[in-house]
Image 1 (cartoon, helix red, strand yellow):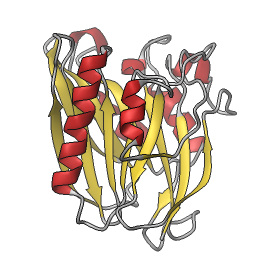
Image 2 (tube, one colour):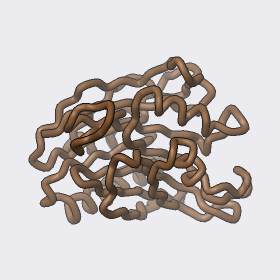
Image 3 (cartoon, one colour):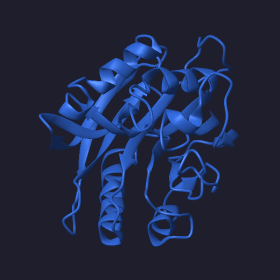
Image 4 (tube, one colour):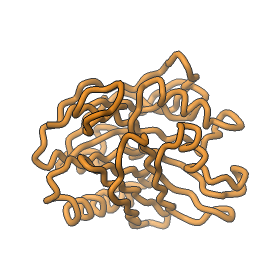
Amino acid sequence: MVFCLVAGFSGCQKNILTIVQYNVGVFDKYAESGFDAVASALKEVNADVVTLNEVDSCAVRTGAIDQMSEFAWTMGDWGYHYASAMPFQGGAYGVGVAYSPKLKALRSDKVALPRVDGREPRAVAVVEFEDFVLCSTHLDLTLESQLEQIRTINHYVDSVYADYGKPVFLGGDFNSTPDSEPVTLLKATWTLLTPETPSFPSHAPRRCIDYIFVRPNGKEVTVVSAQIPQTLQTADLATASDHLPVVLTVKVK
């Protein structure tokens, strides 16, 4: 996913950005370490920024590794922002945003999402860049929590970024299918940019639950390409994670 809004990006046109949404399953769903496979996939699709879900930070189950730092290093000195959703096994569990060193991050934020009916806490990782804002999230499994979490995301974006004149992109695992009430609620104020085709499970995809949305905020956002690839040349997507990556390239004017 390449979103090149900054002049001088090598290998891409001005105003073109590629964004990838990827639930990486703490990088070890099917293999001892999925860092290399996920990084290879993102490099092959020329990703500039990625929203990551299910990421551990210094948790016992994944070797007490700071997974965002390890992933950013594997990508080649990428920047990153991590938003912990809850403490977990001596560390934390949450979501993140990682981005190419070609992009300049201006600020980052974390939004805690409500837990209506006692399920896992959830969060949003937010990074503002010079020409756009990117949010990463992973909604809960229950309907009431999902609806309240979406309302919280909407309130945050309305309160903070409505008047910035920058498009706000929202990528995540929403645990909801295209015809569900939560996705319908999102579509009321966000534009869905990615295909409504299955992204889970990666070895035999049957459910579409991973998406990238946008609030243009006065900008013209045009989809150059959008896909949920099942195969790539450099990575086995069936084993890199239990989700497939969602790859979006857009032009912003």
